[in-house]
Length: 115
Image 1: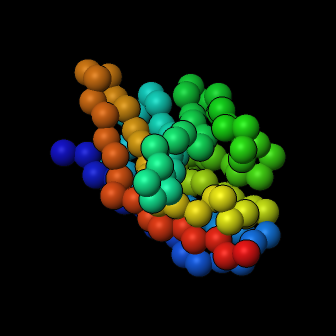
Image 2: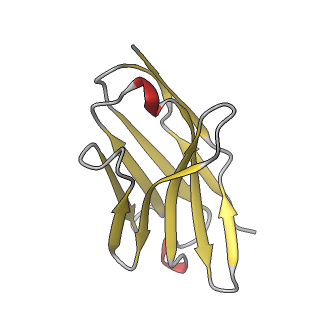
């Protein structure tokens, strides 16, 4: 059973920065697609950034502010967030897909950005 554990969330001031990390219980190379999603209360979950075969994609609302990276040394997926805005507030989830298909979600980490 694959486990994804997010960490790094917290309360920050508008304009601040946070680095989220998603630790996988097995080799990160086994996932051909990985992504970060976020969900605000009462809102639909939305994709923030993704990684597929070394190529990265970003939602328009985070382009230039967030960076997604894979780290094979410790089997983690990170999301470096800068210039945070109140609209970035939400629960951030790690998502990973293996062939099968086998999909996995983390439990999420809360990010709160104050005005």
